Amino acid sequence: MKYLFFVVSLIGCTTLSFAQHKKRSAEQIPVLAWYGVSPSESTVARYQELRQSGITHNFTFFDNVEDLAVAMESARKAGVKMIVHCPELEKEPEKIVRRFKNHPALAGYFLRDEPDRADFPGLGKWARRIQAIDNEHFCYLNLLPNYATKEGLGTETYREYVQLFIKEVPLQLLSFDHYPIVVDETGNRTMRPEFYENLEIFSDEARNAGKPFWAFALTVAHKPYPIPTPAEIRLQVYSNLAYGAQGIQYFTYWTPQPGTWDFHHGPIEYDTKKRTEVYDYVTQMNHEIAGLSHVFLDAEVVSVAHTGDQIPRGTRRLGELPDVITRFETEGTGAIVSMLKKDNKSYLVVVNRDFQQSMAVTVEGDKRLNRVLKDGSTVSADSYVSRLSVAPGDILVFSWEP
Image 1 (cartoon, rainbow, N blue to C red):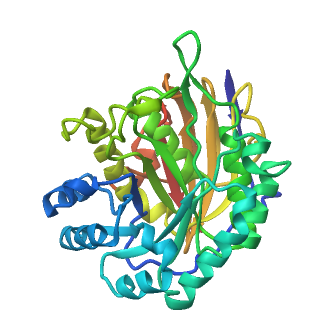
Image 2 (image 1 turned 180 degrees about the horizontal axis):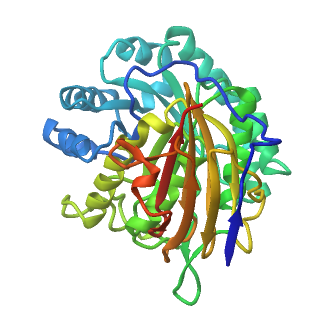
């Protein structure tokens, strides 16, 4: 269960970079609450509560445009950006876009969730109607995961589904969901085998299209998903960031009505409207995202590889690393190893792929090698012992300059 690499050079790495449509002025990865503040609770205090958790963007389904307008004002006062939705946006897109396009809380326009291939032509027309009035704010929707059926996708393969969407629906950014941690028939938590293959395909197609992508972490329990642990949230968030995600989304913030799926224990509970411990988990995660945003935001992904006796389906095994790193070893299940580049700095990101057990990592390097801490500060890697324990789903980040 050990993987040892004595590394002398970076050879054969294909740069996996893509430019974003716009540079962001603030060094902050966007963090979206999907199914955010309830329409019945659209007060400034509720939006402040959301913002205090570290969430920057809110998406909520509204029954009419007037309820949306009330929420937009509360969001503005709380410093929250809104991805807007109401039935009128589909019926009269030009009218709704003209009403909100200059609102300071506006981030973008929601079209629909998890379309199949047959929906693409209509969605493309809808997006173009919105963009003809407002091309400063993005249109947004969320694509299916790769564990959807062929019938659900409407295509023979998942890659074809993503490619056709990009070709036919002109969105400024791409998004997909995949919830990897499930409870099996024996009651044990396990990971879907398709998770990293989904990230491989989606990040590859986003890069080819020259568009940023956003990805999800699950924060509400429902069949067959358990109440998430901090480690499970970290694993999803850090895996997404390691693959180049430029936005993190939580499904959900407000717990939906239980119903068929038995939704329960989101950050804000459905019936009491009070916080659960998951609110605290999300707050801590967002604090870490904010601290490390300067590493991931607008960074070029040079390569992503894996270690372990068995690497995930659809991924590749780690080869050589740059000569600044003289020794690299992981133990346990294995790690994601991502190489990033931003401005004049290079980064090595190591994510423990195990959401239940800690992983020992040995990293040694020359005097250029630094350790990036979760608050964003940098110290010499030599300040720490070379063999470190990485908590389940957690991350280590190293940096250097030429």
